[in-house]
View (cartoon, rainbow, N blue to C red):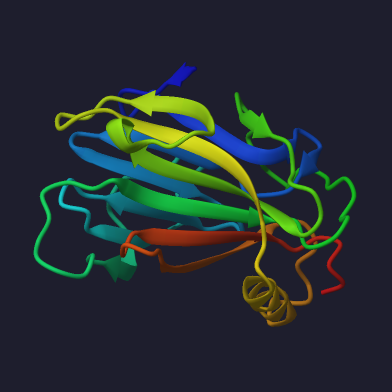
Amino acid sequence: MEQASERNEVLRFAVGGPDDYRSAVWSLGVDGADAWVAAKPRGIWWRLTVKPDARARLTDSGEAGPTPPGPEGNATHGWRPPGPPRTNWKRGFNIVVPTLEDIGRLGRPPGEDLGLVDWSPAAPTGQAVRFTLWAADSAPKGDHLATLPFPGGDATLVRTYEPIPDGLMRYFHTAVGYAHAGVETCSLVNCDRGIEGEALLFDIPLAGTGV
């Protein structure tokens, strides 16, 4: 099991392989009491910060260089779980990477600094890979990829494979249909709210989808 404990000790993970990109390359780390995850899918860094009280903030940090950006940036979305204020969370975020069709092997995006990446096999067509950051004492069965120590208790990154419901599949194809036609090898990252108000990110591969 990989360990990531400080901001300069970052777990990098993705779907596919070094020359077979099926998702953005995501970076995950701890900054004080906050969890964060960041990716640069279309030349701009996006960073999601999850606070100890379950609030989350998605920021656009521009082209902040090859390394993950800090917490500064332009806020684009914020999350506050429904109900009374919380002091902790069970799920920090979800990242869902669908396989819409057999998209073949994708080349490395220009300028991508590969480094050390924990690669996950792509899901079969019509299924998705889900990465979820759980409080360690709530983490379900699945592949435990990393454990992060926080002041309030450890958190675990869990990987699962699951079928894509028909309604969600329609959503993915609609999102791809609105993607910029000139983009050939990258991911489209859409954001939403999860079942308990946590951040839910859809990392949708664009190459080979006909856009």
